[in-house]
Length: 531
Image (cartoon, rainbow, N blue to C red):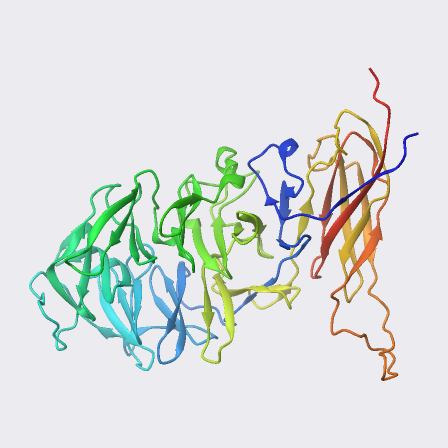
């Protein structure tokens, strides 16, 4: 009998990889994981809880589109649906109105366009235009550009704004795209206001962007450039005034179908291209960020006909892509989030789903007036805004009830360097994160590249008991630990994994409890190879 071989695996930083055949996965990649985070220094652990911000359901028809911060005289969180605009200071939401009993009503498919100018929030769609300051009870209706109310020089007595699908602030001007003048729509036109005068506009201050299909789909600002998104092309507007502005084509191969496919980060802009994945523009070049999971499209795991369920957000320094994902059926609501962390390697993915099996949509970071920081997303079917990455909580709470969520991590196939040689795999040692309450991690064992559901060759439990309380040095107080919480690790030994050429382990965490794995120690004895 050959001697005992040992191999330690502590690096899980490759994240999930749908692109490669499992036989080709790198040592640090996983073919399957849900609701677990990747530690950039190694190890995996259960994600933070996802819990409601507003405890009372948002009123009206629930057709959420996005949330955005508005830092005016007070800090507000703005919620946009397909029909209304809502505001919150950190609790429940109320409708924004322009007079008593009269709601600001949206008609754009993606909700009203918005842009913050100082302490004012400008709102526009194809039917109406408004300005609102946080100290005002009601929004102020502005005069829509009609084709005869232009200004050559700033005029503080004139208050006009384009009916538009997109707004952005750039180079001390307000920009409006896909505009309507009178009864005529100019879907490929981008206007800019007079310098430092967001309510004054000149008749010739615009560019017409006709390439890339009909209609501008979104605007974003990065590195002193205004990105103009079309469905089949992306342009940048460079310069700083009417005399220097010029349009440059960035690409005629990529584009977006909706403004909800654009997420602005601190270092650039992430955008989702339909049927192609996420890309990143840093102000000088475009980078493909979807290579590891692009095979989702070929495998038809994402329902590409349900474009409304797909949105991209930048929350907590990570890009969150909501997707109507299923490996077995066609779904018409977002069921998962593919979460891209660009700080690990060249960018790696995890996959999250709520306790009610949904993917959250169109989020943002926000700070309230008391300087409390929030990472927020929207639930797609329940009328609530959701706080995410709540690592101090173990349960989700979507509609008012604490609920556990499933979580698991599956390893790549381990063959000890040769899939041709049978091996007797002994009891593995697993370094798990220390806990404060008893818990059990269920481990499924698969053999010889057969990872079909129900084909587990063995199942065993890793049961962990929290460390006993001890004596604090210098105080003589029994029953108290030296640290405030469980920050250490402990080694647990599993059961024999059996005779196989290669093995794969799937760790299923306990619902409603934090858990994590730092390292797996394989032990095996190789058998002789027969000719």
